[in-house]
Length: 303
Image (tube, rainbow, N blue to C red):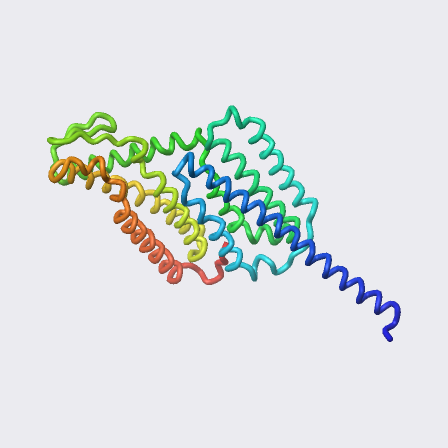
């Protein structure tokens, strides 16, 4: 027979373990429910706005990052319900704003608030279950979820205009280097046979967002220096713009010298250029990683 004090201690430990496992189960189910709801919202949003189809891959990438960094993230956890409640309160408030102003918000702005509220709630669930230290160590996997959030209109429109403008600049450079006669009026290029207009749908924003997401994820996994990670993102933006300009130039030249109908049937023309862009980005990643192994001090820690 165990002494009374020892049996009481064993009972308390068993209850503690059971309550912790039950708490973890409940919180994990809640997080999965929010993620599932977010997938549904993403589907609804993609019907209205196809620019954010890449967002479906974001949760899986975040889960992989959590698994890859699990030994660092979950090394010292604790239950922090009050701190988690702060995030949950903010998430509930944003969800209320999304519902209250739904009729007056543009569709991307409504989905922006709605998905942002769910992601902040997921962060709150994480903090509540595993604590502040685990949250700090899981900053990247959790904040990477923000790639699921559509860009609000007040940022999206200027971004599209910027990409369209820079793509037009690249197109003009290609024509000048190739010796192609053209007349430019804004985003309209008059060639000897056809006229090409770079509309906002040809800005390349969808591939630019997807490539940026890939570079941010790969940079965090494979690079140690934050400066090198920023360089990789900057290279990705430049490659995205050049890639789109070259794509439009190819369409224009084929339409001008081979077949005018190519302008109206070019939906699949971007795939080869997307593959080339990915190759350049991974080449830049390899060079940056190589420079780190040669020049960075060994005491630099991963962030």
